[in-house]
Image (cartoon, rainbow, N blue to C red; front, side):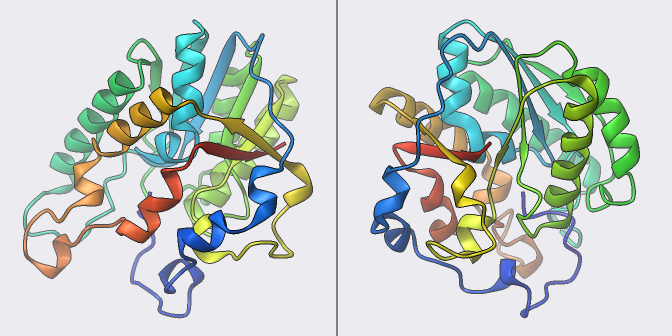
Length: 255
C-alpha cells in the first residue's frame, strides 16, 4: 500500500497527520450513501497496485462475493517490493515472497482462497511510467467480467492513481462496468472535502461475520502493520490510525 513513494515528503498529504476515524464515523453522510447491490454480480476483477490494497479497500465485499460463489480475479499490478527500500532485514526479493504469502493467507481468511491472482510484476513505484502497458493488459483481464474494481485515481498515491487511470481506460475498451475504491483518501481527506466525488459514492454493508473476516485478513499483512525489526528503516507502514479506517461495518466505492 504505502509503497513506491520514495523519500518521505512532510508536505505530501499522505505523510500528514491525517484524519481520525472518529471524524469519519461522526459524519452523517457516511451511512447515507446509496447501496451498491452486489446481488447478481457473478464475476469481479479487483485491481490492486500493491499487496493489501484489495483487502483494505474491498476486502469485505470480496468475502461477500466469495460467499455468493462469484468468480474472483485479483490483478496484482506490483509485488510491493519497495515498501521498505532500505531495510536491513529483508531484501526486495524476500519482501516480495512475504507479501505474496500474506495476500494468499488474507484471501483464505476472506473465504476467497479460490480467487485467481494474476501478477503483472510492474516495478513498485513505477506504475505511472507503465500506465499504457497496464491499461492494455487490464483490457484483456477485465473482458467478460460483470464488474471491475480499481483504486480511485484521486487517491494521491502515484501507483494508486496510475492504476485507477489505467483501469478506467481498460474498462471502457472492454465494456466492463467499473467502480473505484479509495484507500489513502480516508487518511488525507476530511468529511465532505470538495475534490472527492461523494455524489458517486456507493455503500456496501458488511455483516458482523464479514467484518471479522476482513479484520483477520488485514492482520495477515504483518510486513505492513508491524515493524520488520527495531531499525528505523523497518518501521511499520500502516499506523493504527490508518488501519482504523478499514474496520468499519461498510465499504465505500465510487461508481
